[in-house]
Image (cartoon, rainbow, N blue to C red; front, side, top):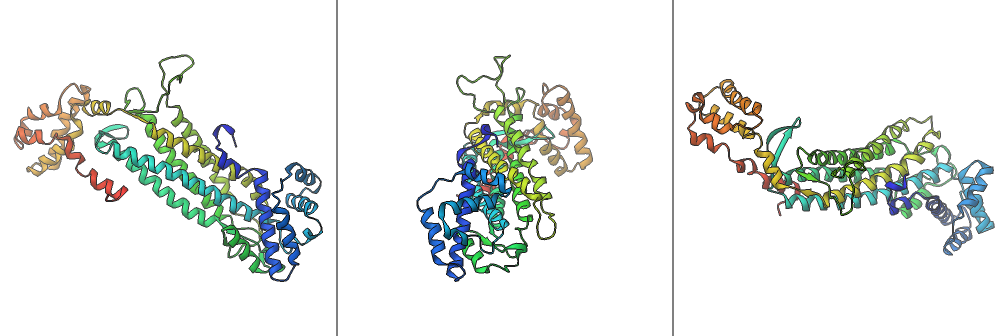
Length: 438
């Protein structure tokens, strides 16, 4: 976790104190269920909750000091709690194993982290919709292979991003449901020393579902899918960030990141206005994706359990969620304040002498009886002259002067194929698909 790329709410989920508090809740709820089943005295659960109700500070340093001797984090925690609660604490952890605590705690943390990320996505989706509607009919050039293709609108670019992040949100909802599972099944997951009803009670109290077969750990395919989902979201962030970076290039300059008063772009060149935020987002996306492969490799554990996954998850759990939370918030800010230049978009549309209308002329020639091969040849030979003139020549005028073209189409028919509005006639249909009929 890098403080520079962290936000307080998400970071707070991963502090040692937050982790120990979840551990206590798991142990106390389990003791409560055991008491209801008559396995331990009710006074044991009461003693735990009575101490908890005093809102005790968690002495992380004291727990760490015990662990330095025991070399076992859960035992260190249980020892410290027993020192605070007294004799009744001996009934904690009855029939449980460490993984019951660790895996269930991680499920709680990842579920809560998902809730923050879902809220982040909601904020981004709202901004994307607002800016998309703002530029719904702002014409701009569509590019394939980085080369001018045919007209689109800037609103369509943002609507496309909205649809993508809406899919990301749906995936994260599924991933959250998949990861929010509880395991209180004891050594090797057989419930030999603890009743399955204890697991059901703890799961209900913590808002989790029950893991059907936990061996001694929750199966790591759940975690792999969760982190893979975060990786996909990161890739979507990078895709939109890369679009902004390209649009901010000096030769394009159709949109750019907001440049605040007093901001400096370069230590050497005072004129620079660099896409630093979206470049940063590209780097952050690489980091989040980098956590996916270790999560996939965690799936193959030995037999009923080993701890090769543990060290990995101590890294990727906090780092992936904290980094993605920051990246989503940063992207939302970029789109919210994005500077958009419709005049420059129109200038770029017109830059290549009408080449963007070549397909319409091609289709018109075929409909007028010219073979597709000949129609392509006629349009292309004129288009290449415009291309090689760097837009100084006009495709419309060249076509109107081409006798083979005018043998099939009148000048008026050719001119009709250079209507920009033709390309935008279905924008409303696309917007309705993305944002609804309203």
